[in-house]
Amino acid sequence: QVQLVESGGGSVQAGGSLRLSCAASGRIFMINAMGWYRQAPGKQRELVARIIDGGRTNYADSVKGRFTISRDNAKNTVYLQLNSLKPEDTAVYYCNADTTYYSGSYGSRSRAEFWGQGTQVTVSS
Image (cartoon, rainbow, N blue to C red):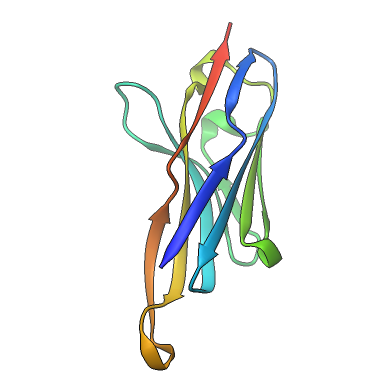
């Protein structure tokens, strides 16, 4: 199927920056959209940013103007640039890919969402 591998998390002080990466691999026919979600302790997972095939993006209100999502289609990779980080940005960040993939013989295809394992972002005040 499809695997997502994230990298780039870490610990920074408030006001600092990080860059997250997520590379997709496997039996990919097309990635329809990629995005980043986050989950803080005791809270539900929430959408941070998403980019669809064609480049249109959307962001959570809480990160607009501070985070930027981008995508390298040739590498099946999505990036999230996190600037002006705040303690409330502390969470596990998960990569998500809405993917059409080869699911069997004779070129049959299926569509599903896949998730990465998560990467921790910690922002101290």
